[in-house]
Image (cartoon, rainbow, N blue to C red; front, side, top):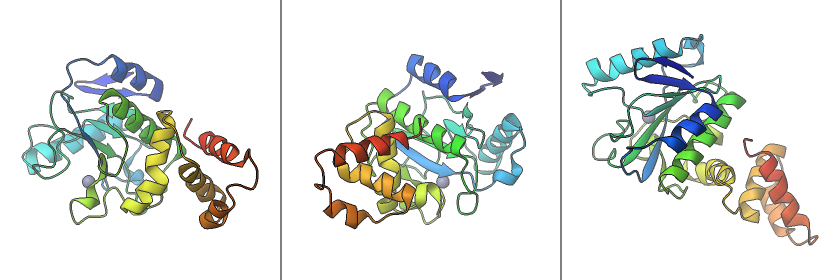
Length: 228
Ligand SMILES: [Zn+2]
């Protein structure tokens, strides 16, 4: 772990220990998904703390917030940085959308940047650990993309295969459930597998009974893609 003032920069395993042991957090019901857009990948050069300070500077001096908007930032190298404390609501939406809401900013512009595997794993783990910590059931009502509440592309048109609710249901929510080791249905597992191998969902949905072991096999394969 590295520290610069209140900013704590951690790898995934350090973050797991940190969040599981954290006390004094308020209650949360939702988790906001954002991308930073600027900074984008081209601006990231092992300058995590400088970027955190520059984002905070913008939030405080231009947006007139009390401090940095986001509780957590993820970076292309997979590190996770703590910003705003969990004793406060997040600041990523317009009021009152921030009530009981955690703000995550993923550093990158996912309209154009191709997300690294490291960052992808960290976003999945971060959301899963926060869902567990705060008893949040992953769904499109609880893991909320910014563009669903304001007219923007945030968290990016390429965020886990798209920024629509349908894309989140197909490509994002099942990955969070997998990471939490929540039971996964055949349909959810199949969506993950067909996305990876570029196959046809409806075709394999119709053939789900071709062999007694088939559904279990697809769930197993989906789990192997699940960010671990
Ligand atoms: Zn946003």
